[in-house]
Amino acid sequence: MSVFRSIEVSDPQFESNNLRFITVKTANLKGRGDICVYVPPGTSSACTLPIVILLHGAYGSAWNWTYQAGVHLKVDELIRNNDLPPMILAMPSDGMWGDGSAYMPHDNLNFEKWIVDDVHNALIETIKGATADSPLFIAGLSLGGFGALKLGAKYNKKFRAMSGLSSVTSLAQIKFFVEEPLKSYCQVNIIDEDVLATLKHYRKELPPFRFDCGDDDLLVKYNRELHRQLQNEGIQHLYEEYKGGHEWSYWATRIVSTLKFFAAYL
Image 1 (cartoon, rainbow, N blue to C red):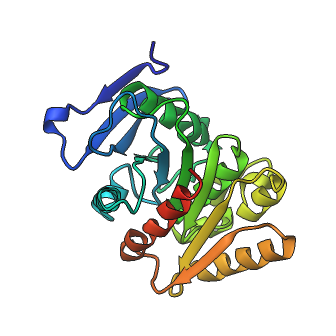
Image 2: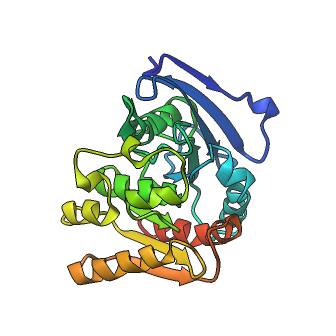
């Protein structure tokens, strides 16, 4: 029996490039949410594949990673060349609130549980190779990086590893991207508003994690500061910088590093 009020899945005869689309109605959103899913060719119901949840940034939705970065095409090629093990990519919308939900609970909606619970459950119900035993990983870009690092740390028993690309590192930086006032997002606990605070709070239980940023990114100074603070705290992590800005050409290239990082923990 489905855990959702309703669930719709794209018809395979009209799908292309190994992509599927799912829409579910969930109490966490008090409405519907979309998920774009890449499923490796040849996946059978007998398989149990790892699932990588990829979070988009402000202004975006479930289609961003595929149709602005072509991530499904890259993964397809990497799998064919044995440079990456078969894995499912789950690319949900953030709940479509304002310019970005920040993947946290507010306005009587639980955008956090939508990602952490609903996305996996929707895949289990509809996608071959997605099971309750599928190893889970989470990554995101910009505001999605903020969500991925916080949710990966907070739900450390669920995720094997986590990664952020060009990440917002504290809720205050959301002013660079959204028009909604900061008070719309504010939480009772600072742990939920700041990546460093979250990582420190769960430091004894953290899964392996990495983050990277372009050297011409408006967020690079905040990512460098997070790296420095983590070093001072003695929290193990991997931080990398590459050429590039806050742009899809950067994320389309650098996501491969994240996926290979995840593969090392299978």
